[in-house]
Image 1 (cartoon, rainbow, N blue to C red):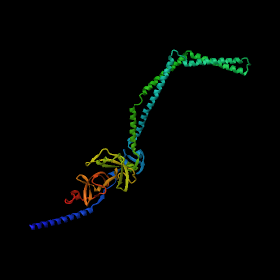
Image 2 (image 1 turned 90 degrees about the vertical axis):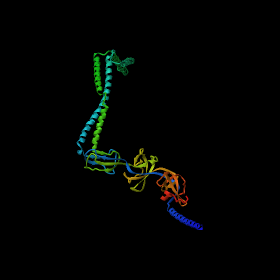
Image 3 (image 1 turned 180 degrees about the vertical axis):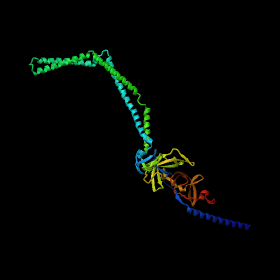
Image 4 (image 1 turned 30 degrees about the horizontal axis):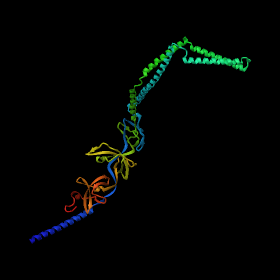
Length: 468
């Protein structure tokens, strides 16, 4: 019995010694592991939330110009880097090298313009014919009324009234002149006063005679000569009216609007054909490629120029659907380029795509950023790394992105507590390129988070005999 007891005691001692050495070994390993941990303290600070993507710089507008006809280049009026205005001529073909169809088109253009001119002139003639008709109708009415009146006289009632009034005034003037003359009639014949009074008396008598004769003439019926003249005037007025009516009937509908449109379209088509002998700038911009020179033989489709509007430089990036609702027009952006080291550019979001595109099961949306401070170093075609600032948070509780891990479908960080790595589940808010905002979790300012937790701790946790 005592022997069995001794054996069990020996076994217990050996087990204790073994456990001690195992524990010491674990502690040493743990200490070594802890010494290898990289940590950073949880803190509060400003967090700038970003959505990152890459894209390619492009010009606001780009056009590649090709020849539409064949011929020999006569003039090249621009060079690479030159600024051009909209519709500016860039190059022309030699006229002698043009196809016969283009040469004949010049004659067609002259005829087409003449046809349109004739149509438009007929509209002016229509307006004149309408005016002539109105005048002829008025003249005919006047001549007809004058000839057909049964009380036809040489003058109108108004003219007769004026003539009667003039006669009465002439009588008064003559009577007064006679009275004055009678006052000086006894004087010598050569007396100045008598002579003046006599001259006035004679003038008044002549005026009275003329007024009486005029009234008599106007009140009398016209003679045969005047009737004949009135008949002739009426005949002329009637003939003029008929001629005006015929002209109006011919022109009253004016040119057909469809004919005018057709003539204008024909002119535009011929002009477009003739304009194939030259290339024009479709918009104001910079010549970025010149692929022809004088004397070159070209054919339809031959590449001639590339023009870019470099007044605005844009970058199109693809943003995943998970982030697209965080992006809005007007948000600032930061841009860097592999080809431009050590410099960051600024920009802003100018367009957010409304329709996504699925590629390999991932839905992306196109977001366009305009550079605000582009210089000569930035060129279309360069690759840009873009960070869009979607939020800025003051006094946020933040942890390094390197410390955040995914465990059992949840985000966790490992805190270094009492020399051990302790996982703590957290809920993340805004994320920048280096830090994440902590919204929920058993974590506080000043805690040490592990940046490089060993894979076995994440996968299996600590040994079972170590208290957590």
